[in-house]
Amino acid sequence: MTISRTRLATALALTGALALGTPALAVAAPAGSPAPAAARHSAHAIPFTAATVTQQADGGFTLTWTAPGALGVTVYAGTDPDDIRHRKAVAKGAGTATVTVSGLAAADRWYFELVPDRGAPLVVADRSLHLASAPNFRDAGGYRTADGQWVRMGVVYRSSDLSKLTEPDLAKLRRLGIRTVFDLRTPAEQKTAPDRLPAGATAVNANVLGVADTGAFNVTTPQAAVQAMIDAERTMVSADSARTAYHSVLNSLVERDDENVLFHCTAGKDRTGWASAALLTALGVPRATVEADYLASNTYRAAENAATLAQLPPAYQAVYKPLLEVRAEYLAAGFDEAQKKYGTFDGYLKSGLGLDARDLRDLRGQLLVG
Image (cartoon, rainbow, N blue to C red):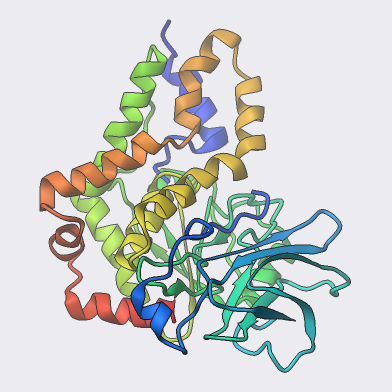
């Protein structure tokens, strides 16, 4: 069976599957993971080893956390992640607990400050922005590093294309302070689905593929489709255009001046997925957590993917499904390519993306707390 270039290109235009790029999902270190020695012995370290926020359909929020060594945690809620605790407490729990917070007023986004009786507080939020016009639009932060720090939320975002954003969505993104938008797509993709940007935001072209168009894969089997995606992931590490694009994204975060940043491609899963993986790994987030963030696109895009497959004849669906998804083996190919070409991931950051030790120190200073 062969998928014609015309049929495949048409389907890809609907999904962005080859445009190399949960309900509320916040992934952290596994519950019960021991805190690193520095965290265990510092009264000022963040004691949380896991913390998630999930917005429910009724507008309430479910918060779950694990803070070894803490006897109690007080929860404060606010719409500004840098100014929360002047508000009244909305919940309390033990060192390991799940609580529900309801009755909060409508807001662009609610943040929750978890204040333990021992150690430093942590600000968390539902990762999803809940944009019907861009379901894979989410916060890139909220993850715990191997040494017990946390990636700040409300600073870096990732998404699919922004062509369908509604006026209320645009206003929401403007109020969230998104001022720089990195478009990882090709010129043809940009022309087909022009971004709609929030007022005051600056677009930066960062074409990962370095070509005018994405083209289409003439794959004939599911295995060939998987291999095509693996090869594409390797290209995102080794291609000159990709290295230039990802350098521009990470370097902007090194030099960030209190402005929030968004990077996106068409589906928000492949090119965007590697951008997030590179960033989180540079910040010291464990590989398992990086992989969970990468695979979350399957959850956020589930309805879109199902709708796309439903438009194809049954004989084509098995071949096309690997192109719509992200899989652990795709991401693994990217890390393998970095290892082969640069020796280590640090080598990739240094020689591939041009980030020296000072850049990485500044990047971590900008985006990590704890």
